[in-house]
Length: 145
Length: 145
DNA sequence: ATTTATGCAAATCGTTTGCAAACCT
DNA sequence: AGGTTTGCAAACGATTTGCATAAAT
Image (cartoon, helix red, strand yellow):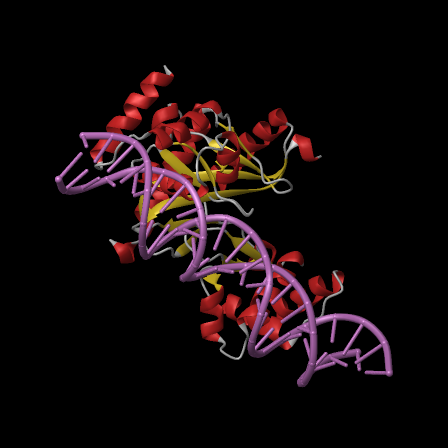
């Protein structure tokens, strides 16, 4: 089942004429194993054989291929996770203001639907071509309380 | 009515033992005049008498005072706007992936309520103390199409 | 063999900070 | 005067890039 992911990543990379090299594969492995978005230092700590600059490049490629997603936080480092297409579900984030950690959550299907509907209507009115929405809850995580 | 804002800002600053100096006032004036979140270079362009480093400091203070809000974008510069307490309404953002511009929108009251309710329930379950939520629509603005 | 990816060190660029002068009270 | 704020230049730190080597096709 995680093999499936690699097949998918390889296909998506090929689509933009990129190879699925061992370094890129390692990055994907780390992201698959994580249950939350990771910073680049975290990824490097997990796989010290990877050079930091290469991880930046790998993630840029993986993002272009649509298999990784960058999350912007108020904290110093950006965070990355597998794209929703690979993990199979649309989700949102709980962002801790204190430690910068990010956890995932999903909205009940009905709430998500209602939200989507409202957002589609907004986009239409604003002549804005929306590709995605982001919903974050900002606050303090259980660890930091 | 914009005088009212200055009174409020002054009060909030005093609360954290900070003065409402001319530089800080100028920053607020620019933000009041803008109808969208601005980057620091944009603010400096508007008021060239302000030193960039001072604008960074001003906005840090204004943010601590709760009268300005920093918006994190995928683009290079952070953006700032008046805090919701001053502009009087909770709103969200349309973020253009192409040019990085950010426009405001509000959700219909009912949709916002439903969303809030769903989010409160999520927070409770995750033992997450939520102070705020952020909702962004990501896509391409009319100017960039 | 030729192209593409990677590591390392150096460069970049938004943001922060030290310090001396200007400002406020 | 005494403390705070500001401008300027220098420092910082996350991310990017140049270039020479290594890997992939």
